[in-house]
Length: 137
Image 1 (spheres, helix red, strand yellow):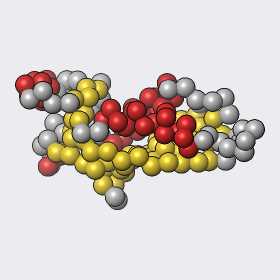
Image 2 (spheres, rainbow, N blue to C red; image 1 turned 135 degrees about the horizontal axis):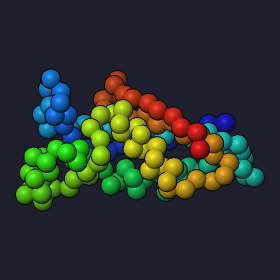
Image 3 (cartoon, rainbow, N blue to C red; image 1 turned 180 degrees about the vertical axis):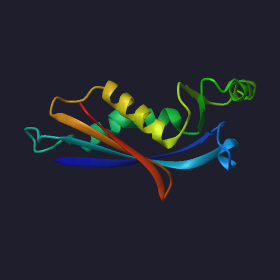
Image 4 (cartoon, rainbow, N blue to C red; image 1 turned 45 degrees about the vertical axis):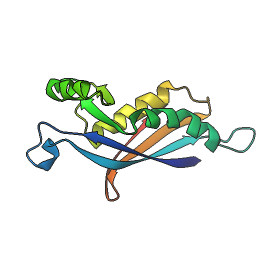
């Protein structure tokens, strides 16, 4: 059985290696869909949607109205520090593909009930461009 919930946030990033416009600092209205797979618990639920919000909500809230920055992008980090702007510094290029792995790890590390055996995430940069990845837990 599977359940899913959507989350939305606003965030900036840039891809310094990109040959096109994404090289520039820019932002997206991101959407995250999180799907949990597992067996039904004693109440007939895979996971209560309240618990999904408690697990995923703080991860998304930490990103909202921030700039996600690759830790080696020292130039951008310096500018954000000078502006006293909210930055989330990560050990990867801030592609939607890499963000999938970020969310999967954060969700798994938040602690899940024993009946959950899989997680899938979709990270949407726009309403029609996204990356997706799954993991067994």
